[in-house]
Image (tube, rainbow, N blue to C red; front, side, top):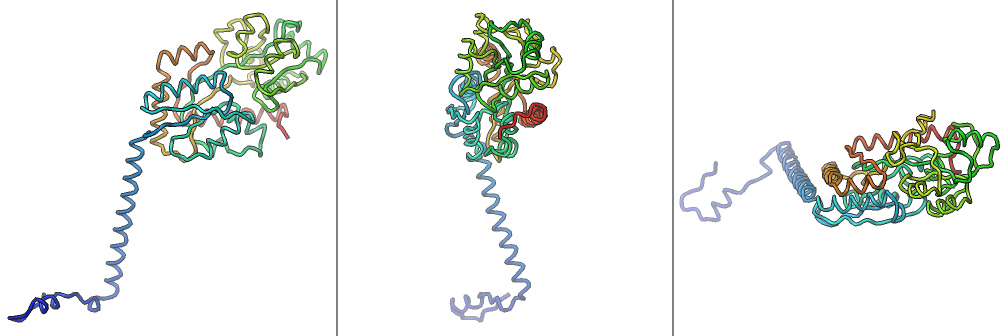
Length: 357
């Protein structure tokens, strides 16, 4: 307490109230300073967290881009545009589809991996980009299929089909295997390119069946299919939706389907599993990924919007017409599926030795 003499001036009173820090022990001053510093840091941190939480709560507040690492055609592109349309409605923002084709899908995925992890850049991951490419181009990819991405949701699985030109005297896969064994290296097959999913699948099957086929790589699935139906090559493997019209028209003959079960579109064509090759596994898939580090609440918001889109009748109908089976799931399950695909093709590569040098 401070006492002021009677008649003292205001200045005298102020002086009597003046705090002299020299009278306070140094350790007390240090503790006070430390407490103040901790308070300031805590206040700033709380402000940053509150700002981040508010930003996430408002997600999305502008348009989102969805990168498709292939040309604007086919089932993957169709699925991306359906997701963009219906999930965009759910989110209240426009989702813009951008096709960034090249290097078997690797170029587009590189862009996704290096984008800002805020949920505003997404990518369409496929069995090629996240299954075969990491194995076929081991050590050469500019992205890690596991570490560089945050899985959001799987979307669909699509069977592929192995088909031959009608000039090939084989009505069944067993007959084709017999022909190929009788004349090793005579029969050719087309693929969208060296190291493609089609190339990997056929080489895997050929190794399991003990046959030797001559690979004819093309620059894309379109040119490969054109030569297959023209009889320039003996066989081709492709997504069922892309080959179905040619099979129904008699321009190709389907011998086997790569999928979990027979396709209702080709109910008389057996799966590889039925033919005695369970190692071939199921068909291809595609789903949505974001850059690694994308906030979990943003991933959850996107996952919910995609699932809501996949429940729309128009979405379901168009995907079924394309031969796809919808497989919505959690981000965790999609991450597991990506890991399983890599392991599957690592085993296949050891058998078929199809790694590109």
